[in-house]
Picture 1 (tube, rainbow, N blue to C red):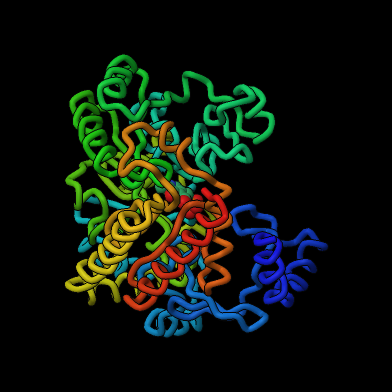
Picture 2: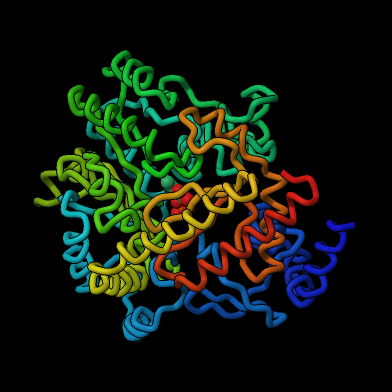
Length: 468
Ligand code: PLP
């Protein structure tokens, strides 16, 4: 009865959204209505977004903890300074495929944030950026094998998706090859359309420094690169992943195997210089996306050593490069409006740089303290696992920390989490229906205080009904 009441209440308050998204569904036209991570049972038709607030077609307002998959985490939706700058540029936009002053200004500004990058190539998405980084490493080494950690997501190209949990932590709806516990790899491949990787193309590393380093040493002559991620959305325990990445990056440097740090999630968020600066991780190539852009416009970048980026850039007369270059650029890569939004958004961050990172960390630490007190007081094992300004994974976890990816993947209860997201919706918070919350400068202390109250009240209610 409790579940029926919850479902009925949400259906009634979102009648306009239900009708409008049903029309999309009927026309097979929606990208997000069908997506399981958006609670397709209760889709929202969003009509307004400003700061941390979104409003649906029924007039319900929500504090947004989705923030465009985290892309709007820095300043929230539609910050005035960014909107104004992009509006001005729109009047004379070149579209794409031209060098513009804004691009040069952005590159200068990026130099302030990530001085460890000698050059950049701009692209559209995190997926493009990691695919491009892999291609550059392959072109640089003349080898084809890519090593990635089990469970790590690097975008939706085949190698990026292989063996990923895609944040569903073993949930059977996303059995990408190598990840799902049942069914066998051939069946997972047939279901998902992601081919079983050729062992010459992919080496999956365990989240264990000794075994990972051993495997890298064994394949040192075949490896084009090792691609990694510090926040690992599917294994978000930096106390474990950072020493692991340090050991692996040092070994890669000694063996001259290019090391790629995927900063799509962490770039400009863990600190001005991302996870690389914060944790002291050195890579050959870095990939950026998400908050790199402003206003949620699509933009990503590969940055890093000139020696690798030069495989796609022509610095001399084209004739001297004939037959010696690869290509990673696409039609809309680094388009003028996305570069403009990025420039205005990062300029704003740069102005706030002395306070942004300390303030957001203080806000998130306050969330963690209140949740720790809640766990101690009630014994309900609700945890937010995150770092820096980023709350990250979130759910009912018995242990404080996990050093084994598979143990963590198995510990998350997706059903309890799904119900929690619906209960948060009822209390005025929008999240994806997967164990992940996005937050950052977009949220005020009041937003986060209200979020903790909503989360703990919901957890008490769930506990009262026998969950998790
Ligand atoms: N790499 C990481 C670490 C990510 O978290 C994501 C997406 O969330 C990607 C790559 C892919 O980025 P995009 O969704 O922009 O293609």
